[in-house]
Image 1 (tube, rainbow, N blue to C red):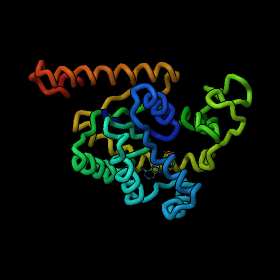
Image 2 (cartoon, rainbow, N blue to C red):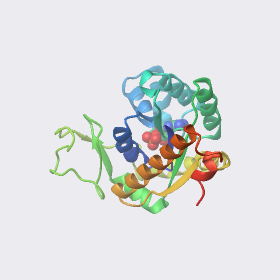
Image 3 (tube, rainbow, N blue to C red):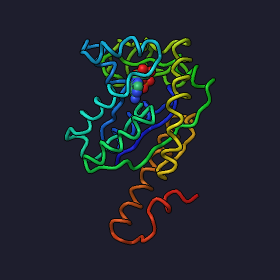
Length: 239
Ligand code: AMP
C-alpha cells in the first residue's frame, strides 16, 4: 500500500505515520526528517535547505522530488510506503504520479487530517522528541512515562525542533494554505482522498487509520479475486 498522510504542520501525521509504519511494516518516508538529516550531515542538499527550513518556507520542488525519487526505489519500499510531508505542492503531486508509474506503482490512499489553526499552534509549540531514537512527545498530550526518560530507548537527551517556534509556525501555516492545501482537489478528483479528525486523541486516530487501511485491503483483495465488477474506488468511497 502506498499512502500519503496529508495535513498542516502539527496535525499529527508524523506521529501516526510512525505508528502505522511499525504496524503494517512499510517504511515511513518523511521529507522533513530526510532534510533535517541532510542539514545535520552538512550535505550539499542540507546546505541549500537549512536557511529555507529555519524561515518556515518550502524547499524547492527539485530538491524534495529528487530525495523521494532516490528513496522509493530502495528494496524496502517494494511493498509500499507512507509519505509524510510530501507532496506539498501540485507539481510535487504530479511528479509523484510520474515516479510511481515509472516504478509500476500507484498511489492508493491520501488521508487528510482535518484540524484547526489554534490547536495546531499549541500542539507544535509543545512538541519535542528523543534526540537518540526519534520517539516523539508533547507537553500537552504525550509526556514520557518517567519524567525526563525516553519510553522507547531510556535516553535523557530530548530535543526541540528549531522551526517549532510561534513565528516560524505562522510562516509554515501560510505556506501550507498557499501551496499545499490546493493539492486536495487533485486527489479528490482521483477518488483516493479520505478525511479523518486529526484532533481526536492519538489512539482514536490510529484506530480510524487502521480501519481505513483494512477496508482498502479487503476491497483490493475482492477485486483481485474478481468478486467485484464495479469500480473499486466507487465502492470504497460510497458513504
Ligand atoms: P516537516 O518536518 O514536514 O514539518 O518539514 C520541515 C520543513 O522541511 C518544512 O517547513 C519545509 O521547509 C521542508 N520540507 C519538508 N518537506 C517538504 C516538501 N515536500 N516540499 C518543500 N519543503 C519541504
